[in-house]
Image 1 (tube, rainbow over the protein chains, first blue to last red):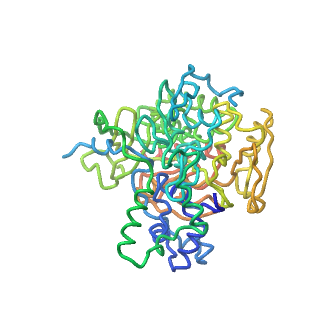
Image 2: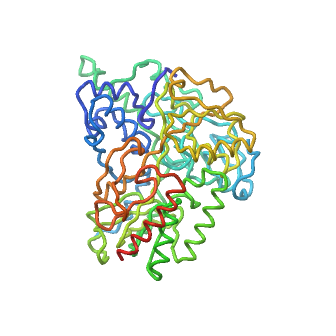
Image 3: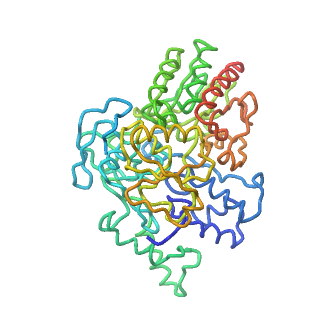
Length: 90
Length: 427
């Protein structure tokens, strides 16, 4: 293993990736999610959102009140698609 | 390693199949725990750099212990109780997860792989590269076969739905049921045992059992092994619930999917264990401090003779004191290391590293309701602002406990009672 600081373990997003995204000009969590892929894996950001939000505040000089979470989309946990297929149609 | 008493009597001895190898365990013990107890640390490989992955939170949240179970991909192995003959395989590796040749990706890109700037000058080269990356990337492969049956879907309406049966949810549901006898109060929890973060503490299982029994006596309907996977605010126009927030909570249970409408929702979803940023912080064997507590106190596993705790000084000191006392009592040595010291590497041969930091509020369902969340890193992350009535910015939607910013198990319990009383007053 080469030395890496992993901020999002599901998608292998490193501290360096987030710094690069901030240097590129992204300062919003929604943008940084799309640029780096953080928060898009099986945990959906449960383990990385806070850490990356704190890193973004530090890198961009934004205050905490200026940082918004990215949109939370269902499902919250890995769920077999059969549960959605079973939904009755009307 | 399984030489400590478990909080509940262990199930009957069973054998699971782990990549052709027979692993002795007990019925009901989670697969991730069974593998850890028999010395398996690597549970798979990460999708991009193929770094080894192992259990981290042991609470169904982190996505680090995914296995292929009985031919189904990406199953959280900490949530799967062992049973005779269960078939488990690791994912994302060639030829196997211990010696994964694809980990060359990690060595080839020591500075990380910036996929925005990896393009070659040639169009054909780009197309071939994208094909290769798509073959190598991703997590798991398709299931062996389609599901044999379509799950049953049913609608249900209740007066009060409490999500999360940790200290806050147990107290709140009980208080509502006591204040409004006869009302339909359901308490939903994803785990097979109530208690939430109590399960990471010595004596927590017994305490949670007593509190759950009190909730049931008060008239609460307890749904264990039931996962609230999403709130759909635009759905459920057909479900008639007087004065409730519009929308449906989707709950996955062993029997199928429940579309749940409620007059009041109370989120006591607790908090997620977080990692800290230090080099190679994702190595298997690095687990959260609460996962360490779950292993030792709930499952009776001695993770190692020595536990090294890496902390940033923000973890709950009352919890850490109980954890350290419990480990000490069981003859497990504790060594503490600061985050600064961990920057230059942690010598962990023969030890397990436990990460102690403030957990993050589990606030997604409130977000899906449209409730306001504010970032407060000192409180753990994005939390809904709630006043003395515990109501969020969405009418009829309440929050209590760690989800509102870290509280710890004792304040969560006392706040839970207050929130239950405040909620009952609106019915």
